[in-house]
Length: 94
Image 1: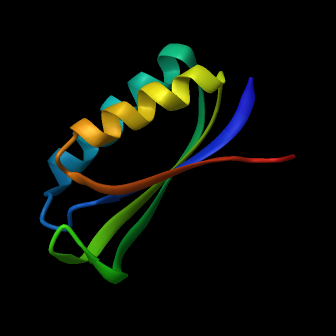
Image 2: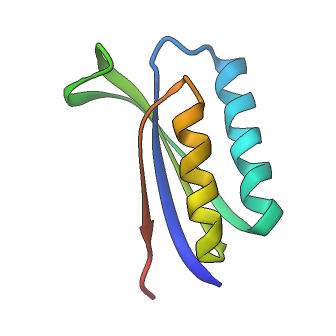
């Protein structure tokens, strides 16, 4: 299993309950085929450029261990979830 870092940018109009639900869903997906180490709420930040008509976004970072096949499934889910406006997954070298 490899270590990964996944950063998502969530629509800033999402309320706290929906954000918590979104984090729980992603955590469950990661734990199904990997092991979540840490979730870091980075807060609301201004974007460098508009993404889907938003100039701000809520940043959330997930650190986890998983098999490479999970990344494909995770990115597929990010594309389906309407609240996620941008994402990136990076393999972390130790």
